[in-house]
Image 1 (cartoon, rainbow, N blue to C red):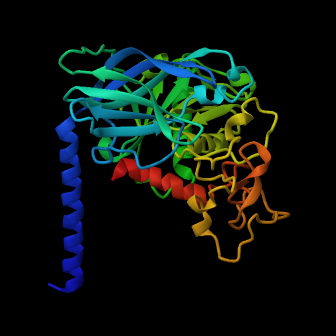
Image 2: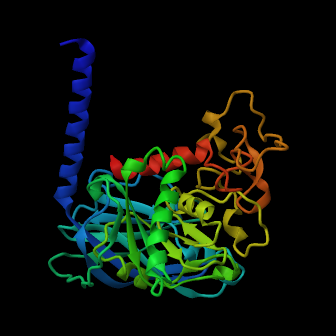
Length: 409
């Protein structure tokens, strides 16, 4: 046997052994089932708390990874950490965002208390656990704001009726795939259009890089129902979102998913997306571009790179720290962003590129104007999917691929 062949076999055996070890770690702590946690987040920009509403034992298997248990991506405003109650060892974590964090960036959110429905899903624990709910503080670190205790012998989670989902693309076991479910709202009187729009959105999701090159890593599902999505969220007419998280997740019981795309059957332009929360798009003629953009938010945790200082939630990026999103920078800690991807002679900031086609990203650099603000925040390229609906730039593609790997490895 030649050395190259022996090396390949050795590497393959090492990867397989590592995967087996990590899967064994999962089975030490969890069943291959899902515990849904419904809770209320209550507060404003100055204070917040979480209040448990219910535990729900979902039908069907756990859709997430069996090996990537601790979240390696430092993104999102919130984190859920599952700890073994006896040892306090962290056995599962995920970071995410919510509408509440954007509400806190509005003028109203500075003082007025509100209550938002939120849902997190974790693997079903085999032993008593503490479910620690954390929020990112002004120091950019995560801090506990409360915890829920779950004992599988004492807590009896509620059940919901399982929903059947249409397979739009199936490439294998959900534990090793990125599962995206499309929730179609407003189609009760138009089943023919529903079928057509499911196919349209499947093709939209898989057509833009890096989704296109990774298309075999995706399962895509379709469900019809009322997700409660509406225009005018946080005072922005085009911001199409839902406050009804419990209702949304009731539609998805029995459906394996990692990410949610709500598709609203309406010709009016609109959409939205929040990291590890959900994405929304209307069926407007711009949906083929809006959808990848919103999935950039919900799957990649990418920031908006355009300038719009009239938005009601532009307080999000004010502060002394570097934004956590990978595709914008305040230059306070640029080494943590895309500096290592730049040619050595790149000027920082980078002068604007003139007369560039809107679909052309242009050269990688550090261009001022991002995160809704014209000054003080910078983006990687002139045009990007997170700016002018150009293609995803190299920085955004890198983060999306990292997120895909979180589900398939």
